Length: 216
Ligand code: G6P
Ligand code: MG
Image (cartoon, rainbow, N blue to C red; front, side):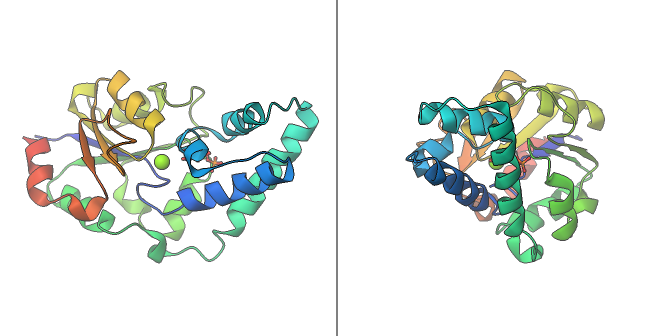
């Protein structure tokens, strides 16, 4: 059967979650806010604007819209500076074999990301042609855990939510997939992603048998 395989981007396909963290950490330390890896988990899958608000809440800082806009620009410029030399080496291990296997088995593939930088990243890493549909931060209004991004992706692939499988590294993203009535596959630590139906530390642990069991 043909199913819809929907991939998150940052921390699932490419190793960019660490760059988002570094860029936010810089803003936080500038503002004298302590920002730990644990805090960062709550920002994964969350839009840029919402992420800044969460950091400011953490530091109990009230800022003008003007200042917020400056920090948002600074964060993105800093983030993009990590990506200037980006190439296929930034793709996480095991991802390309899974994409290939899905294509060979006539499955549909979509991207479902909150990032407004998704398209250039897929282009630079040379994997954009695997995707039958791309839904990113430019296309949706409601951030994960709202299921809008995944519902839109399934719709573009012509699939019902029940026939969609979502790969996610964030708590908000796993929740979005569950709310959408899709299968959720967590990529990362079980203690963080315990709400996912399946959890793997990374794509090298996902074998063809597992994919075949999803296609049936
Ligand atoms: C993803 C990442 C978040 C990031 C968001 C927006 O969901 O997990 O860390 O804040 O995208 O990304 P952007 O590239 O638009 O700032
Ligand atoms: Mg992610």
